[in-house]
Image 1 (cartoon, rainbow, N blue to C red):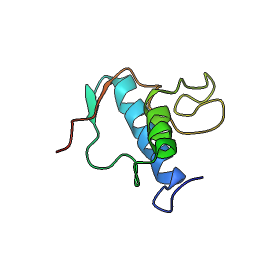
Image 2: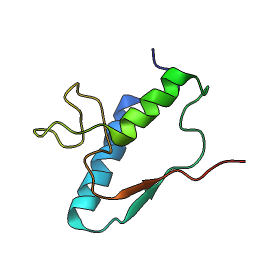
Image 3: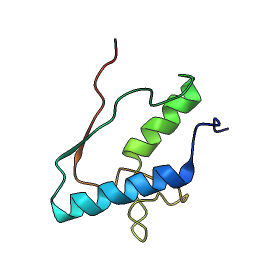
Image 4: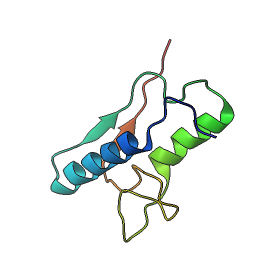
Length: 84
């Protein structure tokens, strides 16, 4: 179940832009700040981790085989600084 603040189209576009810039060599890292999961429930945290690490489908590089967006397609580093 996805929370109301989750927008798959926005997440997919973000993954596409990261992949495009990483492929061109114009992106060294992505820094994600703020809440990566709205409520902090384990399911939401797992979804966030899946977005960051899931391997891409070789036919659609910014999506998984299940057609979910992923940053796993890029060769750039993903950083999540700790929050206080």
